[in-house]
Amino acid sequence: MFCLPCCRKRSAIYPEEYYVLDESSSNRSSLPGSIPEQTEPHQRRLSATLAQLISATQIKKSISALFGETIKLPEDPLKIYVLTWNLGGKSPFESPHLLLGDPSGPLDTKPYGDCHLIVVGTQECGKIEQSMIQSNQTKEWSQMLGQHFDRDYDKVKSDQLVAMHLVVYVKKQHRHMIKNITSAKLGTGIGNMLGNKGAVGISILFGDTSLLFVNCHFSAHATKVQYRNKDFLRINEDLGLYGFNEHDARQKRLCDRYDHVFWFGDLNYRVLGPRGMVDRLLDQGKMDVLFQLDELNIEMQRGSVFQNFQEAPIHFRPTYKYDIGTNTFDTSHKQRVPSWTDRILYTQPKHSILRNPFQKKTTVQCELYKSCDILHSDHRPVYGIYSIDLPPGWLKSNNT
Image (cartoon, rainbow, N blue to C red; front, side, top):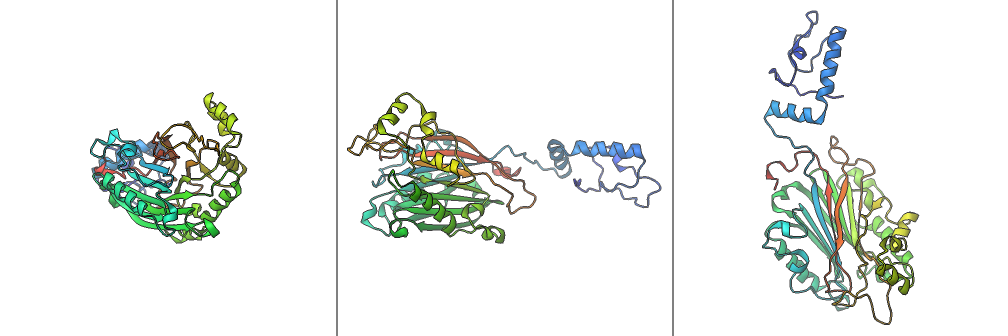
């Protein structure tokens, strides 16, 4: 049922007939919405008036006229930049500027543009063998990122698992939108425990919308697809993040506890086929044919992993494995098959589990999905820009 706002003053937005009461009615209130018994023609006129006012544009104008406020329609979505990169066991390069742009330059010259949230996940940030507890290179990388984003963004949260690192930043003027922050990590590596493989997750409540970011590194090697599937299933069941209310916590799977989930990292799924055939398909630009041989694509179609997730169309070359410092795929004696090991997936909400019962279900749109020609590692970085329609007016006066 649609209820008009109450106001004791007559307003130009309501027709005069709206205030005319039947003389036989004992209700002589002049409050909008107090509609007594009317003649049938008069009721029809009122019904038509109400139908016109229900449109989003009329509601916006009505509220503005009554309360002197400017209410935005949902034309300013929340924009999120997500980056994943396997550094290949190397220390971070001297400066992230090549990857992220000049920090002193205008925002429109940077790959993340005017995004409100920035999420960076890395894997193999330094030699894991140096310490199975944590990587000093990961700390160095975290400091570099902090220095890069410091002018325009505040750090929300960072966490790491050995050489795996995840950090979330928010534009300074929107820091107040974040109400709750939690993080967790889970090792799925050697002995199904150690952190050379596994996941790091950070969840936040942005306004009334819950977001989960999971950076992962699944089992390697071309023949280990079932191990990769098991990595996903275990993380989805055991990563210790439980949403932000009792309803969320009752959900059995991690991905059902949040309105939106972004899951990314070195998933390690390979392209099925001999190296020579894959090279020929790449030379011929037949990416659509090659993608049909992609393990992750096949396993998702089977329903084995990432149920209810989706991925934007891939229009970039495989991200692994390159000879370091070149754009040439593996020339070692192993001749690894070029594969899209580095991916970003996301969910659309299956049902409304929003904290605000008056808020509609939100959707995610991918605006950009691409890789970068950074030659520092045997993997290529992959990033995406995503927008989520939030309720009107969330940016308010601090929209930039």
